[in-house]
Image (cartoon, rainbow, N blue to C red):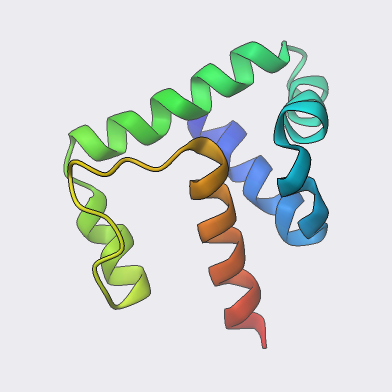
Length: 95
């Protein structure tokens, strides 16, 4: 679930970058509504998905995506940081 919520959140921020500024008031509720769940469950599932990726060493994939070392194993981003990072990368790649 967390991966689906995360993917949806990134897509929503790519479509409207202002949503990243109100992640708990706009983004999580919108994702929750789409999936028939609560904002707090969305937040927790996204946090868990990011945590699992970090614990399994998938940080290298993220660093490779950006061509530089953005994070280390000890530097897990917040949900908002992660969503903003990926959304910004996607927007920059479009131009």
